[in-house]
Image 1 (cartoon, rainbow, N blue to C red):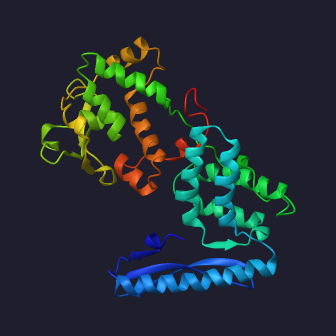
Image 2 (image 1 turned 30 degrees about the horizontal axis):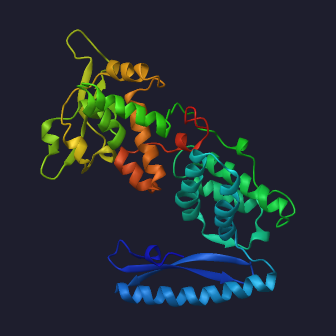
Image 3 (image 1 turned 180 degrees about the horizontal axis):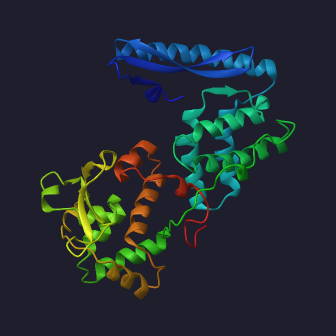
Length: 337
């Protein structure tokens, strides 16, 4: 367990810590949060002591039941020792590592010994994971089916207890992500030509801005000395155009999409305010790349964050609330499935 993550400041401005408690009757390890501690050092000491006790009790429980793993322990073992050994798809590895760390792990409140994992436990876990956003339950079910097939083949359970992913809605995705090589070609083309729209492309690719948000930027939104960019407006199509009304509307973003962050130096240096989809298509066509849109560049920024194992909360903040589900299914990586 990560002690740094297990000791944290609660919303009441008091310290809390998480620990595991062993239940010998149900052969289950439960996650318990202790609140209301005045000092950080006290919470750390209590957390360490509780961890020592639970580790000893867990060893005794495993020995008594001839089972060396809990569900969560074997899930980690399976991914790093078995799954990585036979899976050569970098994209699949990145997605499943992120799913385990950011979706499955936070939702494991009870951790049974491996041979006690059953269909109800896995269904309950999948249902707990679907609260993140549409599509996560399908991604989790697909990964757990692989995991369950492994423990069944190794004789840890009498049958594969995982529900079929077909029982869950698979998110529709139109996400197109360049491979690393394609991305290098694209960036080389952007920088090798006199591209007046370079900033717009970089804002989408490295900051995750949507087209409307880029068009909504003004020079007042950028502070050069700190490189902080504020995102709070966008241009959207007018759904009720008229001869006297503009085809586009300049409007305030919804509260959950308003954000500010430091941009990289190279983007600060590219402070030009124009956008043109035609030039983007010209660059991709001339360099033999799949045709993409500004939205595709924004989506690639989300994939960069997933590759860096960023949390769902951070991804949502930096992107203004992107739906993560379409990035967790197959068929979204062009030629690199």
